[in-house]
Image (tube, rainbow, N blue to C red; front, side, top):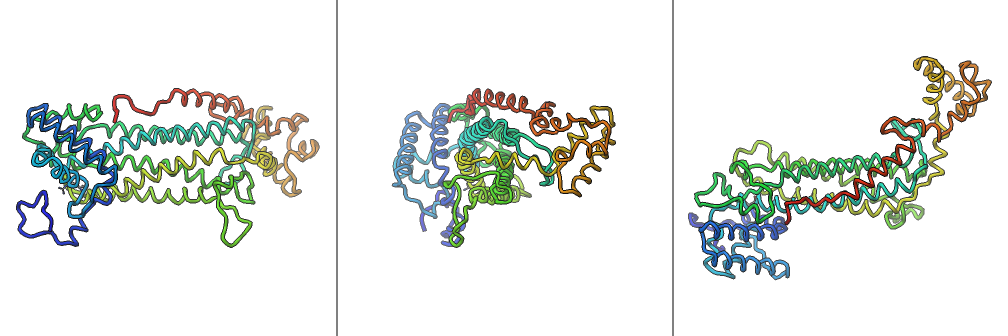
Length: 469
Ligand code: ARG
């Protein structure tokens, strides 16, 4: 049995299995950087307020930096009996600087310490994710710009509905990922509150200066209530929810790319570097990246559910249950980060078979709505026009032809209002470009949307000001 930092009241050592069971070091060692930075700031604040001397604070800071160096160099020795990263850092500090190390924990508890570490970790990760989201959005806009003019069927119920621009379809995803970035930024705003000083749950008797710690660590404010500070993880749940929504969007895009790369659609070909083959069927080229993103979406949802379930019903304030928050949180961060990276790289490596897409817009009666519109603009009430065109569709269907393949005489059976100009009216480019309502698929609109996106992206600096690490 090793000596514990908390074992004053204990007469027996911890059971070896319990030691293994309660240890979180394998997971929370990832927080070391933030743990040490937080401790240095805490020590300096203690000196500023006269709780320890300036010399002691500098000794602690020097020792902590040495611990940081050892961890970075891979020299640091981890040991389950020291439970978590906080204990590891502190006991190594003791070995390096001696007894003064025991002053570091003045006015602090692991409960507020871990809350700080997670917030600092998540703050740094979200800043990186925000930049990754911007890169993804740029890749989408570049694709939209490169394919302006290409058309494909727009679908509802996965049935061909109306022709749309491929760029419009891609810009729909741009909008989704833009909101995902906004959600992450919102989460960042609520993470930006410094928890240290809440101590175990009730605050501390020392004359600490929490604002100073906050300033040193680049937080714009401190948390308000000491119990809430150590008891809640809503900021982590909020992040996981934002990550889940972003993954949901990726999953939908993936599903479309999987469908589109099937022989049945044949709309896209994903480059070899982003697909894999089959060990038995030599002809295969599978969209595995897309499939894995779809699969990993479930994983991130699982992380969100794990966090929500973990926190459900916990009485105030800190409970050890909360130690279980890190695995799902880290997993959600890692999965989202990797997905953003792999997608940003894959997007320019997708070939859109615009001829196949265009051909698909000419069959399946994608012009039926426009034919009704044609009649409506010539005075036929829309409901009646809808019915008339329905009859024409039935007529064409029975003959295995499309509306635009019927002769003028055949079309005239359904309405006297139909004239020769119906054929150009039903051409795909005209159908697309007539949809000029704000947000519609007309080429002019989509060009404007791309231009606007370009401007927004150029002006976009995802790093929050006032919150340097
Ligand atoms: N390893 C703990 C966690 O992650 C740190 C806080 C422990 N506090 C305590 N009183 N046991 O939650």
